Image (tube, rainbow, N blue to C red; front, side, top):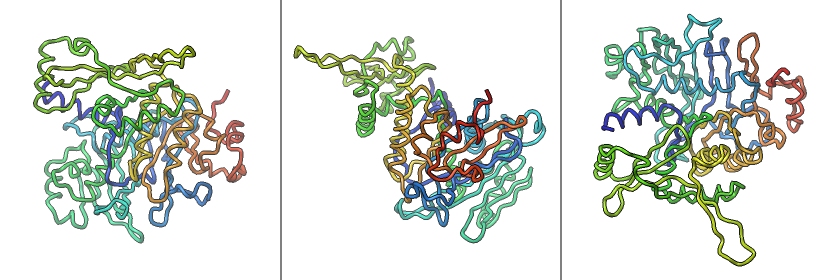
Length: 474
């Protein structure tokens, strides 16, 4: 492929939600509130909150943001088709609207409620936490922003951005149709003229200004929250950069191998194994193009398909093209006769769905566990194909490492009742979704005070009985 094709592919991957980056992040970012209206099965506005209630249980793991306490985790429960995935998809759509990059006239991912809101715009609103610029991560101040956009498939109808301060609100800009108002320092800069002259109806101001070479600090920070620190993992998502990361990052390899050894997957480590070059590229022109690109840029090229196959191309010591695939190394059982233990390797494409899912989620948990700030991760169907105890251990390993100074979050949809049974989660970290009269409704478990769902109560019993909703009607 030529450079333009590589650039287009890279841009699509960044915004498709099918890959997750591994690496250091220098700024702390969190989600406080999400408001959605007229989006798929949601018509009337629903609000999802990551701000803690007054409950004291597991209080040591809550992030302190000003006078509020922010939760590190949230679990979304509900019957099939209740709207759990739709909530995750709303943030994916908002990310695409804000930072997806589009040509004039290209459709926006706004999907209104078919019965009640077909002719109305979709509304997304978020309250987010961003670290203000500073020399040391731990000493940075937290900026809190509220961003709202209302959009149809063809245009942005309304857009608003403000910074929330301890006693007041600093409005940065407001847009209604083609009318745009900037405030403060933005009103004095060249932004007004540029936006009025070049802004397309289907592009946000946040994207237009935030993607500039030298964006205003606050706008650049908010756009980066969407483009770099909001990670969305769908049921079929893969950590596609796994082969390249194994090639380049020894610390990552060690962390992955420790994680695999700690659970009963039968895998002792992951490795790269040589395979015939023609199994990856069979056209001589493509082979020469890959060789030329590697000779100039170095590193490696990754290839994958719609299944689980992952291959890596690199140059060997003789400048020849080398092809390798990702494999799992299985140690053999000890022999009673003293003979050497013989193991075997399996390509990742031949591992079970549960093992593959675990290996694609493990890098996410490693990012969340190892460092003061890793952003916001949303995982749809967290426990898919995994044993309940394994899924539970992944959640526990994340929660054991968070505290008041950390700025990292994990939000996931699930049907796994084990999370309630072992009381890993607080009541305000559990959300129940139901569909009522064709609309998705969202309720926090901590709101059921009338049902006496107190701290330490049998959450699983209350939920399974159907008294709280969020279960299928059978």
